[in-house]
Length: 344
Ligand code: 5GP
Ligand code: MN
Image (cartoon, rainbow, N blue to C red):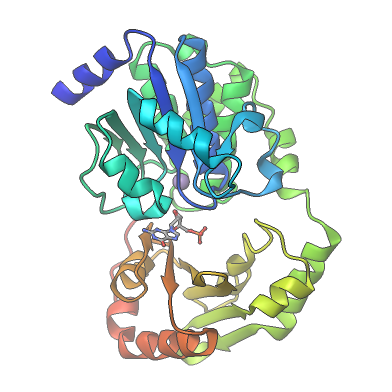
């Protein structure tokens, strides 16, 4: 494995390291970035973590959060650009196509640094010098754990690193419920708990930090913004900018909403359309036997995992949902007539 050998060589002396992850980072994106950053700092490297956008405040407990630069903030951008320009190594975590990091994508493509991609999404773009990638992994945090182990440094994983990694595995498996919850997932989290990760505390930080506005927003969305098309085994939410404003929605407030649609009996495809400044953002979820990532890639300029994907649309909200309904109708035989196989 030549690439692994060059990667190890890169890390054998102190380096300037730039770590980034996808837009609107979730617990796996931020947890893998900060888990890795804390490890590399212990190894004596100079590390900067840059996110393309902000992320939910329920992730702020992670060690290193206070030093993260948000590229979308004017006051952070010059520092982030400098760190990228000076980097010897760039780590791209939890994404595998460069358009997932906005303007940073082209800067990374044009960089002379050694680029590492650690990820578990399908259909990776070929942009890295070393890729540690597996769609069989439930989370990028699981891969970061493995990579630290491969580097012979498992003993350097402390409680703070373990908690960052645990968080990503917990959320990317839907709280150890999705079909990606493998034996390896449990073996890894068992080790993380042994190291000191506090499982119930992390669940509490992430899942039990709702504001009353968020709960009211969820109630409103379920009662007023949910469309159920039983004939298409499909249910979706369409949330306007005005709705988000009315409930003073903050980053992360729509997270998990789409799962309520999928939890309905008889529903195999769920979607959440939310109207944002730069167009309609879409979250897709599907039951195990439907490959929704292919649908997201073919019609909504997106992708992701087999049963959890995302995409975007430049049409308005109403046109987007109409297009979605007619596409499901048109492609229902391919969507629903698949052999049940395991996830990812
Ligand atoms: P979510 O609905 O939670 O935002 O995203 C679900 C999954 O799909 C995540 O793994 C996320 O990384 C991926 N995803 C979301 N939006 C996009 C997109 O626009 N393009 C691609 N390739 N993947 C996406
Ligand atoms: Mn992930």
